[in-house]
Length: 624
Image: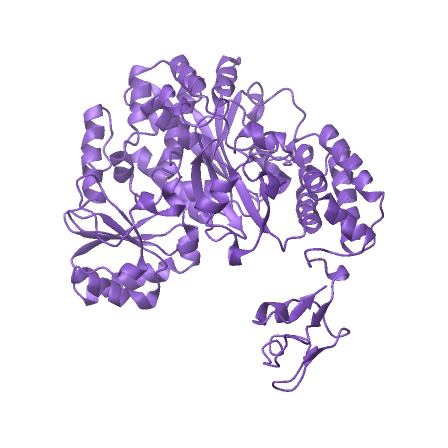
């Protein structure tokens, strides 16, 4: 019944059965993770090599693709399912490994050293010597709700989404529930917006629904601009139908017939996947006119953003969709009362929409039991920085920073000391080692001067300069500020200038108090969320790492050895054995010396690039 209109529950059940046969076919199935993280590490080449090798070796199999399974550091990932056996996941696959992989599959052999894990169904026997999915440290403490299908289904196949109970929640809503009942269920679940401030989703829906006006809109905010964050991108690439279904349910609940997804143009893969999902939903009657013969009509339009960070703010995003200058507007009125073209508008981000179908399917009570008293459910984080296991994780609210950094993240690279973690993107705060047992939820993060934000999490080690970190994020925010209001425009620039002077050894003792004063003014007086949170990196680094500021200002020294104007490189005479390894990478030939004799470093030629420090295996390069 491909491309036929789905009208009844029986129609859904038929497609569910078809989807299960696609996920678990009667012959061997090989799937390659083709999200952006996989593609960037060679997944396309691996996919092509597998396709060619399957033909060369005449292996009778199905070749497919999936999204991101989360462990981005181990990409490309290749899944193999043989009938009656658990799925096995091969990590860090490469073009040259493919012939042996296909030969092993053909001969029903498994190369354990290539394996990441096995993912078994209840009826499948376990394979010896291969860890089960939930026994892998990276996945052990995760609980996937928003990411439930990413890495498990083909995002281009609507049948596979339906096989995972996709669109069953929409059918339930349109055939069994009144709009107010849907709003009430979302409210009872305690779901809060995952895009930043954490406003109660049900309350926002209630306000929009009760606002006057026959025309209402919903918007999916996919303008993900935080450095190091890619949660929304991975969701759209790996499970676009979950976002679309969430939008459909939300539109029905508040009385909207048109929705927009605002996604940055730098996410071409995500845009392609979402447009494909829209096309398939339209072909099957799940989008458009009279869905499930309920009389409910809904259409979705895709807007590509130019990459302005400020468009993550609701009113700036609305202005951009309208074709105007993308700057924030004073609130009130809030978008729920007067938004897109002056009509009541409900805006939620990608992750929020993806949670909605699960809540409808499993119930508000089920969802509200996950997480903490005020922060229900799970949160998706992109864990990056100086941590062993980088990737995308989804964890219950209330988990501690220590569990994320050490249990899931595998600890700090090169066994260095943990120093801080920044949550909430460039406007987030830097949380020190002394607070590493802090539970992660909206309230606790705010209490220590940081925030949840959209879910960026950057881990820092002992070699990180916290003054330099504050300067970096302020430079980013200065560049991304729309410049509309004076506190944000002038305040961020002035703070960045002071921090730059401190990093150059030109700071004064009064600068710390001046920074705090400006930061608080910017926080209190700025028009939108960008300016209101821009001071967090400054205020938290001063609060928790004031000694580093004082070292830079008073002693003209960067304890982390990062600020170039405050450091110098030299060679330890007792440790240098004259191996010459440091000579070759030096771009200015600042290091000289005969083989097996003490080398010397010319300070006038040294540009402090750090190449010698990274190369030396004997710790003979000293940074002062």
